[in-house]
Length: 291
DNA sequence: AGTAGAACCTGAGCGC
DNA sequence: TGCGCTCAGGTTCTAC
Image 1 (cartoon, rainbow, N blue to C red):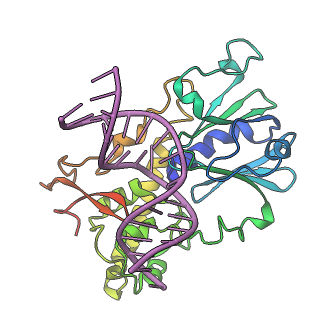
Image 2: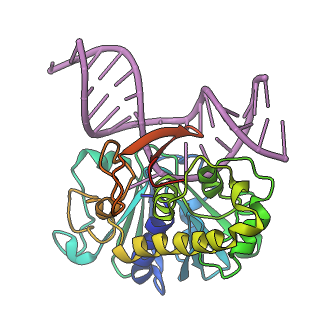
């Protein structure tokens, strides 16, 4: 579940279970995900109190009492579900999932309040690490991450500066985490369709003085699409009482993503959603109304 | 300096 | 029922 809105939703769900709570027990069921877990991972968390849960780009940052930060990335297929003590069959029972996907429950965090936070990731493209808070910004995971979409410093002028001489396709520029952080393949497609901009046009085609209005609108559209997705709520945490997992609430709001051959939803447009490949990823778009 | 392609890994869906 | 193929919300490394 992993673009900015999903990660934000996960953070919102984690906060009440984590903040002010202590890691009572950490169960690690394999050596690592994309990377090995750091040495002594479980032991370094055990007994630590959580002071805050934040998001940077698509990373979840769990701040600890001792000045360290637990870093969690969901990769392509990671999800988190929270089991409160009321969900256990008997008081004190550890939740036991029988479904096939339980094989991918790689890490469980048992909190002092009885909550169980379960990290599931079939493809294991996710990662976890523990860093000192003051080392975060310079760390290789974060040093090349671009501006947050809701940072007020993201402006039309900012885009003008960074789109200058950028021959890359506009969609790939939106996907570039070093430029703007957190936009993934779904929302890049959605943003460009809502904007009526072709994903294939060069980013620099928007860098000119005459495109100032379009750039401002692009900034607003990026925020609008992401904010609406966040407001719609994530799936995993919200539905954690449903044993059959993700219901994919967002897909109902998709205009183009995974809608190849569907009629274009733009009012008055008679186009059809097409699929192309850019940077090895699927781009969904309407050739009629995206110019 | 950019960019295309592959790699990491598993599961779902489809055609045969 | 099963095989082989393609595709998947991310990131990073290699090769032109």
